[in-house]
Amino acid sequence: MRSMRRGIKEMDLILSHFAQGALEQMTEDELVKYDLLLAENDHDLYTWVTGTAAAPAEFAPLIAQIVAGLQSPRD
Image (cartoon, rainbow, N blue to C red; front, top):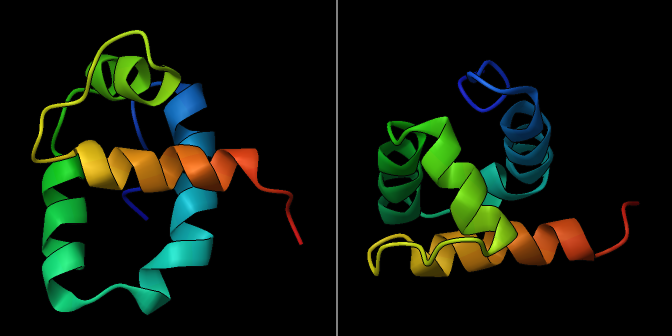
């Protein structure tokens, strides 16, 4: 639910799309990292996902997963 009730609509769409396909396969550690990511400011998240700004090292692999999910075709 927290993936789709963000502050800006773009992040609602991006994160809810990611959550639908990824959350069930994530390990406990990955879920903790995703929860920490959700605590970040939406505008920062958006710049990281769009590549306007570099994501912090702790979130870079997760942001890369999110971006990869945006670039792959939907089922």
